[in-house]
Length: 156
Image (cartoon, rainbow, N blue to C red; front, side, top):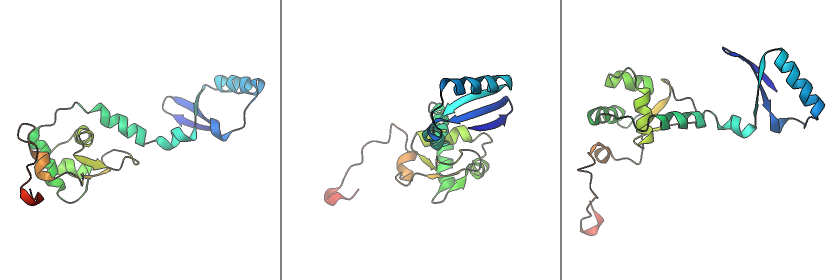
């Protein structure tokens, strides 16, 4: 068990797959002690612990899936990234957007940008254009982005 102090009080994290099973008396005494000290109990397992911050980042990205990102702003972001990666903060400064994180989340959800989701998705996170995205294709509007026509011999 791990006890952590947060702004809203103490929380005891009971890592259930790391401890021996407790009998009902021991469990009852633990709950009484935690209650008397104002400690909240949260049961978790090692899989849940290891899933963070990936799961939290996925939820955050999904939250901004419907955000309307202006076509011109999206083009500026893709040009700014070019063939390199930038921190979210640097990207925001280059394109002139103070609140860039929701926009980056939307573009990750749209599979235009890439970010390592095993680290926190904040202003210090690194983002890049997805390597499988051609810049010309992603900048096209949905009306003009029709199927690619192949020329004889397989050339486009």
